[in-house]
Amino acid sequence: MKQAITQSKDKSTALAAPAHMLRGRHRRWAIVGLATTLLVLIVLTAAVGSARISVATVYQVLLHRLPFMSAAPAWTASAETIVIDIRLPRIVMAAVVGASLALAGATYQGLFRNPLADPYLIGVSQGAALGAVLGFLLPTAVSPVGMGLVPLTAFTGALLAATAVYLLAKVGKTLPMTTLILAGVAVGAFFSSVTSYLLIASSDKFRGIITWLVGGFYMSNWSEVMVLLPYAAIGTAVILLYSRPLNVMQLDEEQAQQLGINVERVKLILLAAATLITAAAVSFAGTIGFVGILVPHAVRLIWGPDHRSLMPLSALCGAIFMVLTDALVRGLGMLSSNLTEIPVGVVTAFLGAPFFLYLLRQRKRAVF
Image 1 (cartoon, one colour):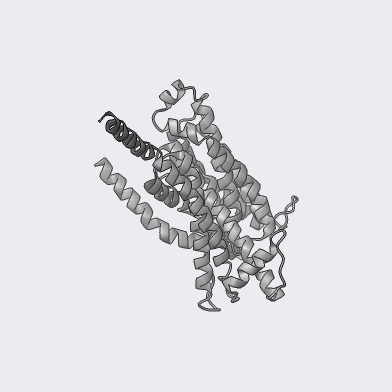
Image 2 (cartoon, rainbow, N blue to C red):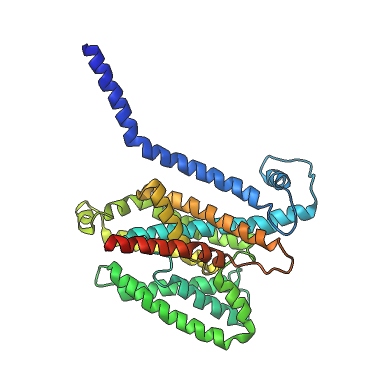
């Protein structure tokens, strides 16, 4: 009898322990599954485009380029050039930008404790837009550091906007989140007004400026990807490192302070990291909206609010979402040779705006 009771206790303990650890295991498997899905999608979407190249050919070309892997080419040189030099950098750029915007969105939502917060809340987008317009209007198109002038001026504008918002919002040694949002709105409105004036005054370059502002990856190349990657990697590493303190700060900032967390320091570091990856992404892809709202909120609904898993899952889902969106844009471009490619920012707005309105309505019901 005693042995039976002991066995039943052991059995109940064995059943209770996995219940405590099940979510963590599921999240780890979700990260592995999403990473695998992203790699598969990169191969599949590299076959999408005006030039018809089979998935098998794409797979063979990519396999041939791996170290210690070689095979007799059964494809044309033009097909390899299209896959490696045209489509693949565009896909990788889309993945990095999507991951950056989604990760930045998750960070801002955690800091502001608001699921409607997004990477453009503190004027980064407006600063990048003004910088890009100035880059278009300057007489030269090449920057001194070897990259395009427009991405460089856009990145500079984004960082200047974020710095201005921070200096305006800072009160002594503290950084109130409400003041930060208000400062972001004010600075963003100012930058937008200057951008609007420059658009009116630059009729000869209006089309190129508008194309950049609505966002897209049609001009992406490996050199731009290599410039973007370090910023995205550094910002991502910092955000992941501070995901645990961000969890504690969700309860109450005073309690987090009592637990030994330097709240103001954590807020500054996370704001800087999220702004850095947002500025870098916007500089090369333009102002692609709603990714930072849509993806983190969907991930939070599925896997929960723990930022230790929310951050990497948001980054992977953002990359997958953006790769699929860009593939959709290229697929629509195949329907007609006369059809102008739809900007990616238009598609994300078309998909994200209804979801944003849904979130807004749900919050309104919660309030009332």
